[in-house]
Length: 207
View 1: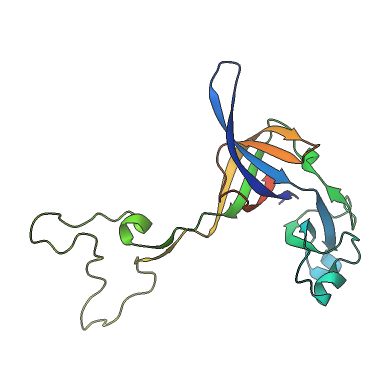
View 2: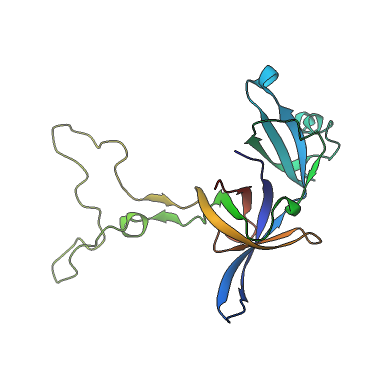
């Protein structure tokens, strides 16, 4: 894995190319991120870079403030670790901006999807509904969920009603359309997980 950048999803818009075709665009306010910790094989058994994003202003605990003293960046709200082949090119307190990417580059975006709450089987797993004719009492019911006396229980991982969404999703192969170094904006073609204000991680796609 290579190092990436952290950001917040601003929303979606569209731009038009030279042929007049609309291109869907996701706008991300990415960085600036600060290198807060460098891990190496000697001390941690692996090489990794930890970066932080967005200053935290409330509910700061002493262990948190102590962790960020070396970087001199204040307490940051979001932290993420990226495994790297070598840590020689990084130092504590280094700033990572959107100029890490270039227009036309492919990236991978990871974030939490929109939470849909407690949903039924038709919405959660696309089950077919029951008959809608007169006399039927099985319109959206789950139906049988297991055998009788043997085994006398419901097997684990049975598809049933429950929480939908609010889980991590990764979208790969998205194209960087443009970057704005002044406003720290990253414009990416296509949709990314989550709603506006969602925390996301962007890394270059392996090609």
